[in-house]
Image (tube, rainbow, N blue to C red):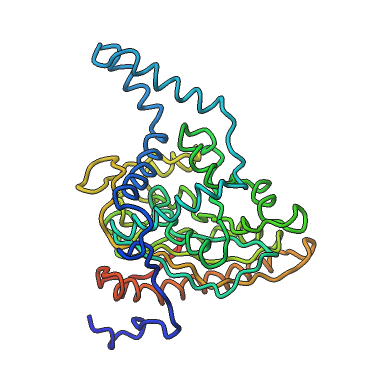
Length: 367
C-alpha cells in the first residue's frame, strides 16, 4: 500500500518522540533483570487469577501422592500470610519501587516486543488531577504500562493504577499492584483519589489510570478481527467523574495490545455473558507459540500513545446534567478516533507493524 495514495495514512505534522528507554546506550538495568521482572509481572497475575484452580490441582496431585504434602502446605501458608499482613495504601505508592519497576517494564517491553511510547501532553498542573483513560483492555490490560514512566520523567508524576475491587483479594498479585499504587474502581475510591478540592492536593499522585472498557472489553477484538473494537459509547461514568472532581482527561491508546494474546471468545459468547454476570473474567486465551493460558505474549510491536489533555468544563456539581455529560462524551469520542487514525500510521512506519493497520478502523461497541 502506498502511503501517498491514502488520505488517512500520513504521519502527523506535529513533532513526536518515541521513547528510547530500552536503547542499548540508555538502559539502566541488565536485560536479564528486566526480562525477569516482566515475566514475574505477567506470571504472578496469571497465577494469582488461577490460584483456586492451582490449589485444587495441587490437592489432587497430593491425594495421588504425586506431590509431597509440604508443597501444598507451603503454598497455603504463603497465601494466608498475604491476607494477614495489611495491604499498602494504594493511593500512596512506594516511589522507590515504583520508579524502578516502571522503568524496568519499559526497558523490557522495548527489547521484547519491541514496545515504545509517545507522550503528547505539553504541560500538566500540580494543582489538579487527571484521568488517564485507556484503551483497549486486551488481556491482563497488556500495554497500558508503557506510558507510565513518561509521566515520571516529564512531569514528576507517579500515575496510580485502578482495578476492580476483587483485585484486593487475588493472592500475591494484590500486594504488588498496591505497592505500586492502585485504587479500587468504585465511585468513592476514585473521587477520593481525584477530588483536589474535597480531599486536598494529590501531586505527585494526581493521575489515575482507568481502563474504561473494563473486563467486558477483554472479549472484543478476538483473534482474526480486521478492526479494533472498544467499549466507550456506553461508558459515560468517567466523564461524570471528571466533571464531578474537576479533573481533565488524558486519552491513551495502546496499539498492538489486543494482539499480544489470542483470545477466541467474542462479546456474544457464553464466557463473556458469565464474566459480565459475575464481574470476573472467565476467558480462554493463547500466548506465544500458541500455548494455552500462557503468560508469555506474542512478539508483536506495541506503541502506547499518551494523548494531549482533553479539557473538561469546570462546573458546579449542581450544573452537571445529562445533556452536558452527553456533549462532553461525544466530543471525547471524536478526539479518541482522531488519535487512533493519526497514530496508527506511526505504529506502521516507526514500529514496523503490519501495513493492514493503515486501513484498520476503530469501532465502538455499537458499531
